[in-house]
Image (cartoon, rainbow, N blue to C red; front, side, top):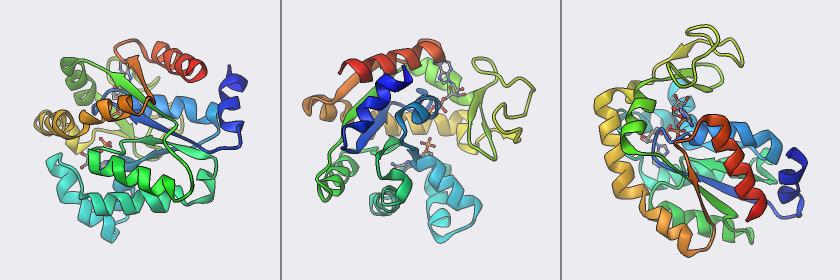
Length: 229
Ligand code: ADP
Ligand code: AMP
């Protein structure tokens, strides 16, 4: 299976996959599961902001107040950060964009950015999950402080409570995974990000996946969709 989907990235053209879906839909979980087989890295804007915040960079401090409120960091800052990240050598064959774009202006900026290199979005993988399930997923999520891997207290528990299966790092609960901030983030998603579903459908690159299935089945569906489309 690995070889088959790798072939997609060996056409000579870089591959830009977008993981689309609400907070908690499983974008990060799935991006990490497929990045090795696709041979392109996950680029998660939320992780990049949190990294900058932990290092107290200017960018991190700017993003902080927006992230705490559960609203979007301004587009100019976000787009510049993505542009910088995509220009790194490890993104030469493309990237799996996770959490970006998050509104129509960011999607237009991404198209413009890729067009400079004669590239375009290869596919947008929309992971569909019901609202009540999203709340349960986000409020039970635990994230590794070291490698950012996501676990869930019930749906995807680590072998040892509080310890990352991948790197033995310490697991923590994101401040913005509190019930109140989750409600705000979902409101922002349905207002600003959900219109991207139609945007990518109109471009003919959208693939819709039932994200309510268990993690391994969602992964199988994504790989099947990449292979068949
Ligand atoms: P996103 O990156 O879209 O915000 P995550 O990948 O971090 O979402 O997943 C959110 C939470 O839901 C995590 O706690 C993760 O372990 C859990 N999760 C991910 N996929 C599934 C799934 N298919 N079924 C149940 N729980 C899931
Ligand atoms: P996430 O890790 O994807 O849940 O993102 C956490 C927070 O980071 C969001 O609530 C936003 O405040 C910010 N963020 C992440 N990606 C973007 C983006 N593409 N545009 C604006 N803000 C973002």
